[in-house]
Image (cartoon, rainbow, N blue to C red):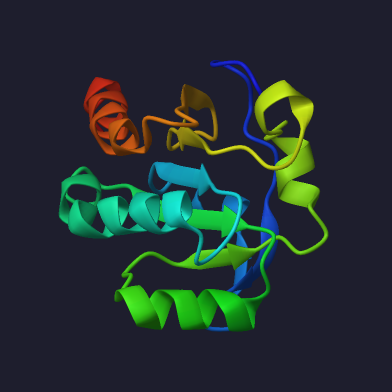
Length: 152
C-alpha cells in the first residue's frame, strides 16, 4: 500500500457505463475516494458496495468523488451496479494496473485488497483505509478522513 502523504498515481480506465476515467482530471477540483475491492457479486464486496451506496450522500456532501475499482470488466460492473442500485461509478481494472500502482494486494500479498484511498484536491493521499474483514468500517473512516481535509 502507498503511504499517506505520497502523490496519488494516475488511474485511467473505463467506467461501468463505458465512459473513460482519468484521476488527474479531478486534480485541483475535488477530493477523490478510490475504493479497491476484490470482485463483483461476492459477499464481502457486495456488503461494501451497498454500505457505500447507503452512505453515498455522506461522502458527496463533503465534495468528494467516490469510485470503486476491481479487476472485473465493464459488463460485470454494469450488472453489479444495476442489481444493487449503486450510484458509485465502478472502474474496470482488468489488467490490474491500478491495483499494482496502489499496492493493493490482499492479505499475505495474495489476491486483491479491500483498501480505500482518500486523495485530496491536490492529488495527495491523505488516508489509507484497510479493513479486510471489518467491511462496515470503511465508510466511517472515509467520512472522518474527508472531514480532516482542509476546506476549499
